Length: 433
Ligand SMILES: Nc1nc2c(ncn2[C@@H]2O[C@H](COP(=O)(O)OP(=O)(O)OP(=O)(O)O)[C@@H](O)[C@H]2O)c(=O)[nH]1
Ligand SMILES: Nc1nc2c(ncn2[C@@H]2O[C@H](COP(=O)(O)OP(=O)(O)OP(=O)(O)O)[C@@H](O)[C@H]2O)c(=O)[nH]1
Image (cartoon, rainbow, N blue to C red; front, side, top):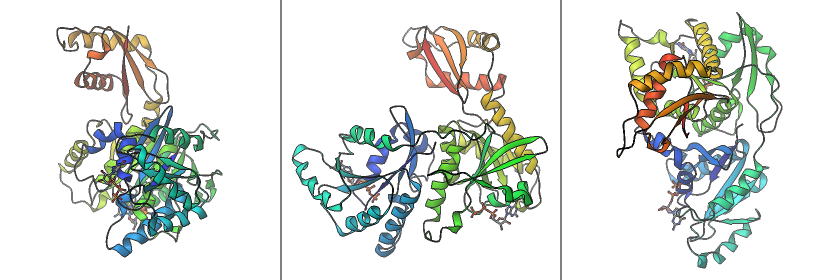
């Protein structure tokens, strides 16, 4: 379910610091690739049993002061439209500024839950200063220090009360989301698949769920396409089309089982593509990559390999993902893309019987056991697949804490070699036995 928490506020109040704190556990993964700082504004966070997306609106602002303030206002409007909860961050050390008041005006007119978050309350003396923020007329003030983390737990306890529960699914069909940067060919692909049938589009009623689900049932494949359509219709949004599309992408992604990530063959894979890829991975969604506009590429016998290697390099370590080279305009390999998505969906639901799992994996482990640490030998005794909506495996052993990342990766690779999990993130756990 797409629960989105948007952090809004003027520059320098500490939005990024809070964002980093909330998404901490994911940071290493996102930081793995270069040139991403500019785009790193949304990530996955967890609090108690809830998983949600956090958006830091700050970094989307660019340009002169004028544009700057206009852009902040626009982001606040988008946040009101798209987010589940808005954190309006202000700085206790500077008090109320004009821009703070502007933002508060916009937020008061919106219908979304707003939390006024007074940041930089690093010590008790500053607590009284925060009373000034009651002047926004937005209710209670939540005192935090993003730097130390104080107050953030209490804040999140309140925030998650506003989350929406998983809606009852209208049907059990697989859901595929077609995502990608603007202009990559998403609408063209949907039109190619659905053609005139497009009229049977059924908008799903619901509060935050405004993506469109399209029923596909042809040539032996039946599924729902989750469409992020309507992007351009929102006249309000001019400068922040990228930001807006990111919001939409997150929603579509969270509603789907398999993400069909379209990449522009001419432009190549960019950091925004990789961001979406990792978001899908973190959300345990299946993934198929389409390299579209393949008709525009001058090819020789190495071209495909070069593309594949480049994509794998950028998406590592999760490289076991189908890559299909399509041309939507020339109707090349479109059906192959659908077949790949169906296969990934199957893989995602696959249950390997315990006996088979142990028959295959125990000899492999015997031949290459976990390396000993400080003279301790880890003995893996048996393996089971835990039931869930994506593949999870429990390896029972005497000393789970001594198993290191490289060995975990080795086991994952062996699972992938022996049982087809192409396109699906795998979870591996070590448990004491
Ligand atoms: N004392 C104190 N300083 C903080 C706290 N949180 C953030 N800061 C500092 O405030 C400054 C701005 O923090 P950022 O997180 O970059 O602020 P931002 O709102 O994301 O700023 P933009 O990216 O410009 O929109 C940095 O120097 C932080 O170290 C806090 O809780 N206490
Ligand atoms: N040469 C070529 N052009 C394509 C292909 N697929 C789409 N296009 C063109 O790329 C442009 C953008 O296609 P759209 O389908 O509107 O892209 P989109 O991803 O839906 O774009 P947004 O709505 O901006 O997100 C159109 O002019 C298409 O005709 C392809 O396989 N080859």
